[in-house]
Length: 197
Ligand code: 5GP
Ligand code: MG
Ligand code: MG
Image 1 (cartoon, rainbow, N blue to C red):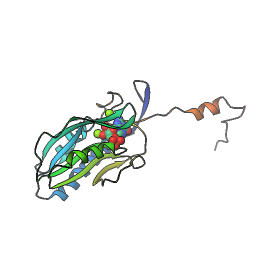
Image 2: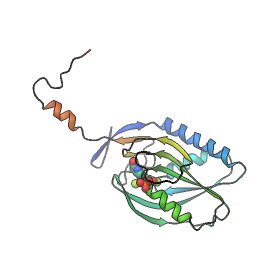
Image 3: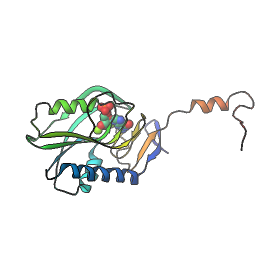
């Protein structure tokens, strides 16, 4: 278990599982893309680690660029997406694949689609390493998903809690406070002493 600021986190997805998922994504996308030279667009800050590992696994020529958006405050997603760095190159006619660390509500993805609204790209596809289906509120198709996870806050592998945790090579999940444990501990005599096999 680790502590970042005021919260505790428990190990959730190992570095090996992450690497396997990144490799699967790279192979799947390379097969679909065929002879095109795609442009991978990472969404900073969170995606820096998955983009770095992904392009090393990508077995063919490709280009890489980044845009920088921010939506999260602490452990909550907000609808107010800030565009900190936009597109810096002309992507007319290009096969574009967005590389996200995680898709949660989809608010950030909506902003990505707004950014590409006026770009005359050949195709735009979305790839994400992690996806929280229970939290997703949008209809945009997610073309490539690495690992589906429950609707709980995670850190590590590029993802932060108020700035900390991005450098962890594996994923940790927030540990919610255990009110039920207290109930049993301070309950009536005998409570919590169930039969033991
Ligand atoms: P959305 O806009 O889909 O709600 O969230 C997208 C962005 O919020 C992600 O790219 C990521 O930066 C951040 N985010 C979403 N879920 C989590 C999470 O569980 N942990 C962390 N650290 N960031 C998250
Ligand atoms: Mg992100
Ligand atoms: Mg963040």
